[in-house]
Length: 495
Image (cartoon, rainbow, N blue to C red):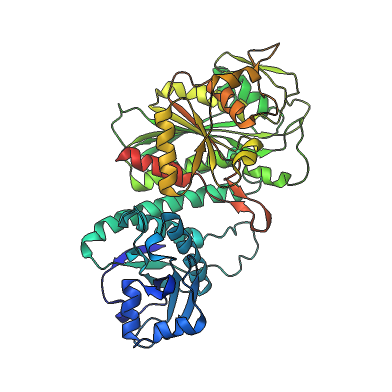
């Protein structure tokens, strides 16, 4: 989808759909007021007749308004004028995207950037508009024999009263489009079934990404390479599958070669049946989403490359399946990690931390500035935080605060949980250096405690996205989170 600034008279613009905003009590934004004058008051009269309240996210579609050359007018509610928060503005954009795609318009002129939103600038508004309008058109149809009716929206112009803001608006558009590209890639990969999106398929997509950008290179480590490195924890998970494990490494060079990279490590379990500790059959199909951490790393690297961010990044994705088999891990087995630490496997369904611990140790060779791992790691995180916020833990509070800030800015929020030494005792094992689970209590925290034992040599944060990576039920599908959070974090680091 293409976006561009527009500074002409909106009532003179010929377009398929013109989008204007009203606040409650029918208080118009500047463009809506102009449009009402051009129609000799018809616009407000129609809104009153239809009982339009202009609450946040309300929409009303009008046709052939007098004095306006646009085919359609989409009126969007923005709530109370002095209380329009970033979250409410985003809600209005989402409603706009839904209503706009239903019109089957190919092009539109949007005057919502002129709305006064608390504590944000035109760049932020343009970023959210470009991101959410594109995501509002997202449909996953690659596995359907007939795609059906798809959104045809291909261009949206953003109206500005002040030409001086056009550069900041264009900057926001670039960022929003890049975020949307990253989210689309992450969603496409996650929505694919496990028989298609295997570890090998995931590796092939990383190769395709590297082929697109001269700033990106890729290395794929095979199981034989991992054996030489001593990745006994990771390989113990893949033994139960006929699909070979892959360790996918992407390097993005956007700064000086000597600059330390930011490293993203994403869990890439392309299907998780739980192994010998088999999961319940109900909703097991959703375990194709256990690679959403890896998908978000690919999506974030894509966004960074599209924006040409002046940073160095490394993306590491341990990819495997976790299935029951004669060679699969058994409860009570003990494996040796790349770090030389031994792990007693008390539950084979706690496999994500086994592949992540070796990947985290592997990142040491890049001398990273900091490391963030992303994983659909624990059901306990869903119990604790629901589906609104990702769980956040780490060994560096400054890093955690930066991620929380990026989450607030991007509206892709996280919530920090404690990582106190008190919880480490739950991982004690009579037979190995540690157990891979810490019991029922504080499951999200003890999972992070396990990972923390492999992150002592660098600044590290852990994002548990088990509750935010996908939606269940009738609208089942991947969300693309936390690509916005991670991309915003990188934007903040890039200045």
